Structures are given as C-alpha cells and as structure tokens.
Image (cartoon, rainbow, N blue to C red; front, side, top):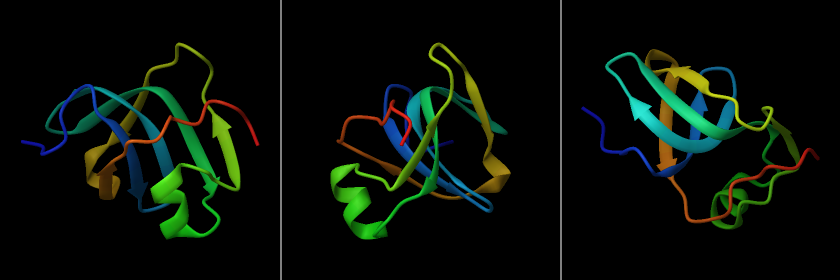
Length: 88
C-alpha cells in the first residue's frame, strides 16, 4: 500500500539521492516515474520543496521510465510545483 497514488507529482528522498517525477505506477517493491529528474543539489531544502527551484537538476531523457526501489526511499512528498525538466 502507498499513500501516494499514480498521477501524483513527487519529490523522493532516497538513501543516496533525490528524484522528482510523475508517479505512473507503484508495486510492492518499486515506484515507476515519468518526467523524472535527479536532483543533485536542492539548494535551501525547505525553500526548494515549496517552490520547486533547485540548484542542480539532471533530467532523465524525455519519455524515460525511471524505477525507484521502495526499499531505498526515506520519504516521499507530493508536490504542487511544475516538475523540473531543464538541466541546470
């Protein structure tokens, strides 16, 4: 079970990195994302979660499906901001 449902835009913190993306599906073991990006540096963490502005963004190629293992997830936040799609 997950409190986040498919169709949600999310910020995911794992044991090693951050991701943003649109949840496509959730299984017992994995979360499938589209429009995903690796957030290498959030800048001021609380501010970035409010406004979606990050210091360093590395988007996955357009159309990619990205799988995140649920066992690596520390926390996941549903967000309202536009998902970052431009490298910076």
